[in-house]
Image (cartoon, rainbow over all chains, first blue to last red; front, side):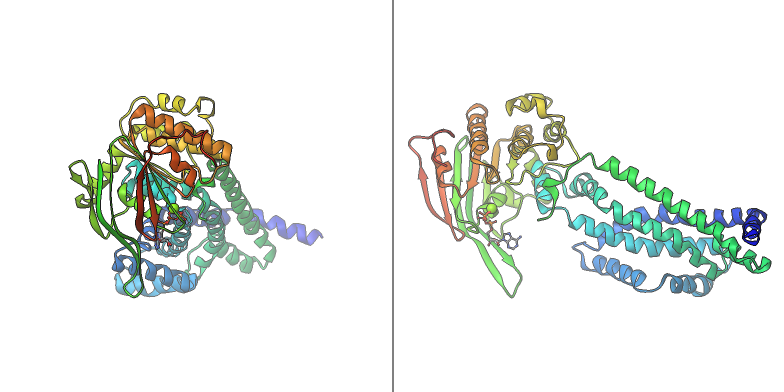
Amino acid sequence: MNGIIEALGGIWNIRDAFAEGALVTIQLFVLTMIFAIPAALPVALGSNCKIPPVRWLCKAYIWIFRGTPLMLQLFFFYYFVFPFIFHAPQVSALTIAVITFSLNYGAYLAEIYRGGIESIHKGQYEAAYSLGLGKTTTMFGVIIPQTVKRVLPSVSNEMITLVKDTALVSCISLSDLFRVVTKQVSARSNPLLYVAPAIFYLIFTFLLTLLTRFLEKKFSVTGEKGSEKK
Amino acid sequence: MISAQNIIKTYGNKTKKTQILNNISLTIADRSFTVILGASGSGKSTLLNILSGLERPDSGSIRYADTDITFLSDSQLTEFRKEKIGFVFQQYYLLPNMTAEQNIRMGADLAGNPDYRETIRAVGLENERKKYPDELSGGEQQRVSIARALAKKPDFLFLDEPTGALDEKTGRQILAYIADIHQRCGVTMILVTHNQNIAEMADTVIRMNSGRIETEQKNQTKKTAYEIAW
Ligand SMILES: Nc1ncnc2c1ncn2[C@@H]1O[C@H](COP(=O)(O)OP(=O)(O)OP(=O)(O)O)[C@@H](O)[C@H]1O
Ligand SMILES: [Mg+2]
């Protein structure tokens, strides 16, 4: 028992490394969200576009990034695309991770948005057109605002998955929280140090759950009877 | 006056085409109240959507006074709908994230009509105006949607089964509102229904069958919403 308490006490000794790793994890998470959440919208619209090449391009992108492992994509961008295609070996692992994660999560979010947009009854379009709204105003002023509430739970799921997926970047030697702690675990032969990142991830996802609940409340002042797809 | 000539509309692809509207011609006098009757699937909604410029026919012409709307570009057609027409749907299609008042106001703002409050009063919704659509009964929602259409001060009001989702008492009330509006505003009204009795309220009755006009008849005397059978 004393041994366990002592081992847990070791967490205090790795606080600096922990803070550095946590910062990388948070940066990766926040930047990915900032890029992926808006970028997925044009892809979602594009995958329903009437112009075939635009539609094919968007669908192919979604298919590739959802159809292959994220870890494989990380390796591919880190060891091949950036050094050999872009001739940019100096680009940092964090940048590459943010780009890869944004592309990957953008694909998932695009599919979620597309499903949300398709779930709005076509009568909502007709009603908007009959009022004299154009196609663009209808989409951005009428359809998408109704979609937000419906996609929130799924988007929140993706955010929680992303928190945990950040640990994958240790494979491209980016010093995120998981990698720093792993180093300390082997240097100090103290596996109980993993309790610290576990608590960190739990708190992180818990905060996201609170945020989702807050947003859901905010958007649920409204009913949906007239817009449900029958 | 609306004058439609040889309207043809088909749905489907190259291999399997179904003709929905089969060479329809009709004229609708200004300020008249026309009821279009027909069995389910006879093409009533399709005809109403085409007459109002919500959809385009495959061929044929639709003239409003001296404008043939089939020649208008998409943006001109949007402008036409904004200025000239109002549309009421069986399922209301109000914006769920706006209150009754905001829904009605949207119609008014689009048409540059400063006095949306008058319209709220006209449909007797002063006490309900702060409620969201899902907090309103079906009859109240339909009154909001009528008010939203009327707030645009349209020259032509199209109604597709406006009482189709309502019980008898509420249905009669809505019809009474509609008849009253017709009297007071001098708007041209075209109402689609499969309820034969409603036809007795109209100036002109058009019967449709399998995409064709079967008969067109003028009523010598009109009944009120409370005189017709249900
Ligand atoms: N977008 C569409 N694509 C394919 N077929 C369609 C489409 N819209 C309508 N139809 C078909 O056209 C026919 C006429 O439809 P419409 O909605 O005009 O009938 P309706 O007379 O209004 O019927 P109801 O009284 O049931 O509303 C139906 O057979 C319908 O299946
Ligand atoms: Mg119909």
